[in-house]
Image (cartoon, rainbow, N blue to C red; front, side, top):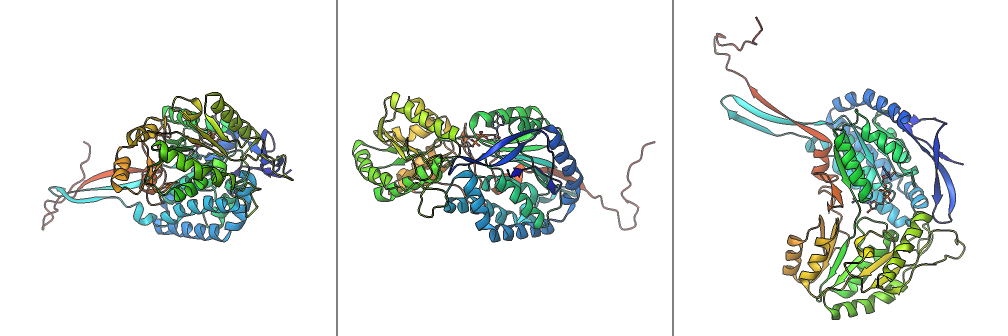
Length: 499
Ligand code: NAD
């Protein structure tokens, strides 16, 4: 059985003892690898290597660090096909989505190729008589990233690329469900010329996460995952004196105004609700038609479009989405569908019990559509994270606006309309972090920043963009005075001495 080991100090760790986890192939339900589930001994080795390597990396001038970023970007591009296949076979998303996963991470690498400019400080000449003030942005030292299963390339690159570019050593603890792409990323960083010990991967579960949160040498932790764990990581990391940002779960709404282009909306919803089997934090699992007539017209167009979706193995070029990640996750989604029915939703299309011929043991699910979902239902309140779309009908704009605003999550939201005033009003007033106007999945580009509100994001800073640069650096502020030495030197500045 293939073993996925830690990557420490430029090589695999070779720690043969300890717990192991199974890495499954969601297409057929078979185990395809084993991953080491490490603990503090592995982390200590990684921290020691990081401590040894980081000062020289931080002292490397920014244009040289940028050259490593350029080389890495090129390597990701040339290895795109192999990486996408590896990712798709462990995650279950189709190849086009796997390439999208890598591409969105690559764009953050492109962003940090400009690190000499991004890391510049500020300068004020003459803040007082003979006094200048300037600031510099210095790396934290050693940072860690803890990432979820659903974007095994993009999220490690969101964090890692920025952390490294500004001069940190970075230790990644990826999801134990699909650990191979992170290891391949570590190899590509080495090939790009990053010194050993600057980017490392430690594998594990809660035990490794706790070791990271408690380690005194790790100064900053970036987390992405579900909200309860995000909150836990935020609290425990902050209590240990670390800088922490922790992105959590989501339940994004798509508001459909009566004047929206419904053909476009249906097309967008099919991609945003069911693409990647709904396992995206920016998926659109709730649609809110405004007015009964809009709801009826939308449903009429939506039902045949959902029936036409093609589910297949992740390497099938015709498939629009593949299996969900694990058997446990499939069972959880099925339980939520039953809960929704028990709570009184109308099950319009039932995706349970879907069998793909020749792949009966794979974790496939057909698409599910639920109508007449109400805000008081637990299936609405909670994240299902599967190929399930819920229709919540709203009477008017104000009721539609209140739904995402009052929901416990506040990651993304979209409004579909031809009315600029309604769109503007919505974007201004909605209590959610990322807003799409006729854009179903409004993930900000790499030079803006990504982050949700409420239980979708704990901490003060977002991922990547300028917020990423701020998170992974500390500002030092210097106030300097250089007294006039006088033309004859009589007034020369003398360093005061004691005694
Ligand atoms: P998860 O919370 O189960 O796992 C995330 C990470 O936490 C993993 O590395 C895992 O090993 C670790 N972990 C799991 N249980 C832990 C525990 N008890 N204590 C400490 N660490 C623990 O999330 P997941 O299922 O891998 O990913 C899906 C979730 O991530 C969804 O909720 C999704 O919305 C969210 N997500 C959010 C964003 C965002 O930016 N807001 C992006 C992607 C995914």
